[in-house]
Amino acid sequence: MEDETARRGPKRSLSADQIVTVAMGMFDGETPSIRGVAARLNVRPNTLYTYLPDRAALERALVDRLLAEADPDVLVGRRGWRRRIEDYAVSLREVLLERRGAAALFHAAPMDGPTAAIVGERLLGAFVEAGLDPVSASRAAYAVIVHVLGSASLTAADLGDTTEAALIEARRQAVIDPDAFPLTAATLDTAATWNTVDQFRWSLRALLEGCVTPPRPS
Amino acid sequence: MEDETARRGPKRSLSADQIVTVAMGMFDGETPSIRGVAARLNVRPNTLYTYLPDRAALERALVDRLLAEADPDVLVGRRGWRRRIEDYAVSLREVLLERRGAAALFHAAPMDGPTAAIVGERLLGAFVEAGLDPVSASRAAYAVIVHVLGSASLTAADLGDTTEAALIEARRQAVIDPDAFPLTAATLDTAATWNTVDQFRWSLRALLEGCVTPPRPS
DNA sequence: CATTTCTCTGTACGGCGTACAATAATGATA
DNA sequence: TATCATTATTGTACGCCGTACAGAGAAATG
Image 1 (tube, helix red, strand yellow):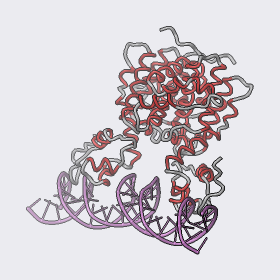
Image 2 (tube, rainbow over the protein chains, first blue to last red):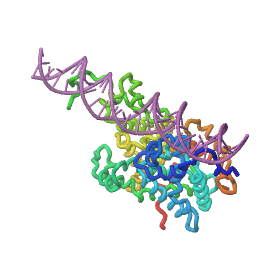
Image 3 (cartoon, protein in one colour):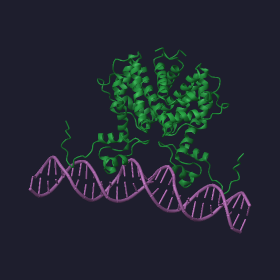
Image 4 (tube, rainbow over the protein chains, first blue to last red):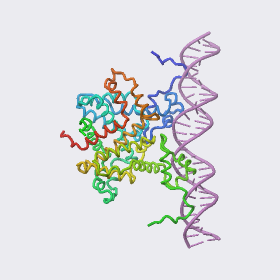
């Protein structure tokens, strides 16, 4: 049972969850710092080490919370598998873009939390439902995760401090030498929208389509 | 013409290119630091500010060099478009995984260098060759970049300090509750290979396939 | 020559993660 | 109840980081 309610020493004034919750509200382009979170909690920085072994633990916890915030429940239900995957993907993308610096976290901390496990299992379920064999389903699930996170972080990097609208406008104004880069110049308007949800949905659709298409006999 | 050979003041002892070259050899899990690179060059840290405005500039330069290191020339030639894209993608993945911390760079610094432009143009060319209209080609090109970078950074994050073989073994040994996560448990062996080139090729193939498949009539 | 311009250095500031010892609060024990 | 064992929190410190600023010295210009 290990009831921890009766421990010696002073009462704890915080909890790991509380710390993570506060940190979740502190994305500003960087991952919230230990010192910053501590300050917000009116506590000296080293106090946090009572609840978290190190900064990496905070990062892992944040990763899991972000996955949860995108609501893994949309991955189950009676809608079609495509729709469910797309909905979760779009939602996760939004969650990550809402908090500047959140996307980059996934490339520093492994996704080994409980929510990651749930999301993984449900993605697998969706792909099995789509008719994939287990091996392909597993690969497809990972591919989807890769795509969502890759897209979100590249968009976050491109966005930097400006808004989506500003970025689109800036890209459209870019001067491209049409002799050296004819195709790029000709598709400038499309390239300007690379970071929109529409483009995200387009590429996700392509990926899903390819995942359920059997490999071409080479 | 702006010949800069006759400038006042002392001779420069370094060049931006030299700095970037040294930095390229210093990935060790983090992006090389200004201070670290300076030390390697036997120079005080602030000296580097003569050649680079700030750390972000170093990061952008490194991003471009990494793209170049993957050899954009494989994107042209008389092999088929699939093959050319796959070759560059696999090569870029390798370049990024060879240097721990390199992949994460792409999510901090925008890809706006000269090599990025060349790679973009050639990717577009490959997709046009595949029969895509310009808009789809542009979207497909971006999707490929997203996928390669996403995959490389997730793999880098998962890899951490260990080797690929060790990671595969560790994943295989993972204990998954088969009641809560039946599909995950059943596909453990496949999940163990998520970070291999094979999985990378599989998902890239899926993405390419989907990119050249016209959207299904909803 | 003196002047201008430019590179490089010394020094410093404010941030970061976190190690370590001391302090104070609490529950368990005698 | 008095003591002891345990624990949360703090003060302080170390070694990193990026980089701002002022000054010394080198080189080309007049």
